[in-house]
Amino acid sequence: MEARGIDHLALWLASLEAATAGAAVLPDNEGMAKIRAGDPCLALRQTAEWADVRLGFAGSRPEIVESYEVEMRRLFPDLEPAVSAIAEAVRSRKVEDHQQHLDALRQVNALLRRLVDDLANPDSP
Image (cartoon, helix red, strand yellow):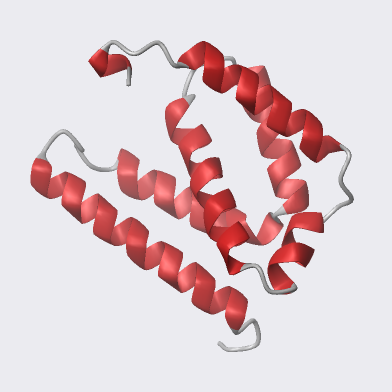
């Protein structure tokens, strides 16, 4: 967004602070409990949001980002490996290049599909 001249950071940071404050009152693993109760869409939404935070706030207000990360690890610990893999898949490519952008999207899609499969079949190897 910055490359397009859109000032989004203040709104995103305020939204991130509000999400973090709301998460802070929930019990440990509450997010994973909801996912396991049959809400795989929550897993996808939360993974995408968390990856966006990692990618979109690099270097911006680290204290806000770290507070968010702490809460997400507490509520959704099983999502962090997918979040890390998605962030790395995007960071490792020059997404301005059309082909690399498509490659990143394909990899992210595969990672999200695998996450849903893993959550749906927690006992499979």
